Image (cartoon, rainbow, N blue to C red; front, side, top):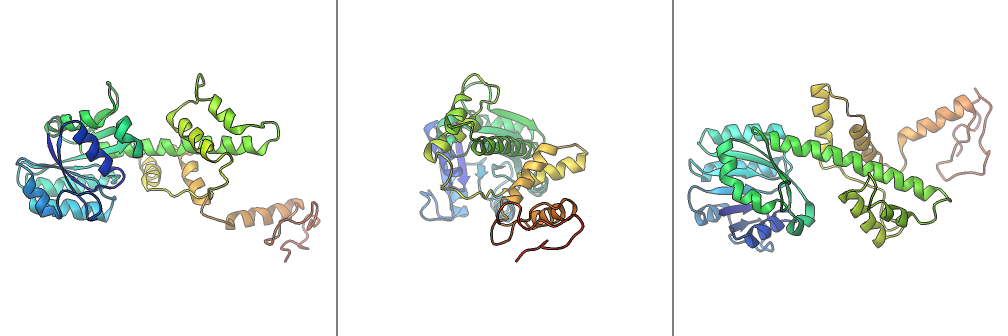
Length: 314
């Protein structure tokens, strides 16, 4: 099959390569001249494709995707097809589909999972859109997904693919947080003397084995105690959207929500909230208060309950 690919970064570039290896003709475009692109503009991309065309958009969510879809709407012809494979919000899909439908251009949203390993392992694909458009794209989906019966789902109508990927990423947040907290507890005790070997032992035969566990072991093999890393984790949007969707549908998501908030906490070198927690503990229980300049000796700065003495040591 012939396909235009817009966005040749870590995901789009590898997807284009996997499709080429599968025998498809790919015409790639990226704004960067160093991206091994095939054409230098959207106009050249459209001209290089035979009608009816199919163009896959693999650029950052939000304005970059919206601008790209709008530009394609002015360049493509009736009967052409646009696929958004980025991490767009499902509500944006519905707007894009409606705008393109006015020009008789089909739209499919496709959540893609697999990261940099997708080139060799295949990608998990969650698609939303009309049945006939999905059927037309099945040669592409079959090549991108892993071998076997799993790895692809036509999840529903427009927006369903990105909604499914949003929930997928929310689950990912929770699993990653659980592994991270377990690792921290193992590191904290003197009883377990080989944390890396403990994680490695879980890869076979246990109920917590997973690809994410395999990646955790890989990370520990490269840096035994993760001393080279800073405890900072960004969120890419899907976690927030998952929690917002849960509120909209009155569905409790305590684990995913806590995992999202833990990422927010990771950005605070000195948590303002924990300052208040420390102050309150001192006030009601006379607990030791750690100075902003560092911990004092055990028992220091302890005042009697109700006293304000030394509550905020200099």
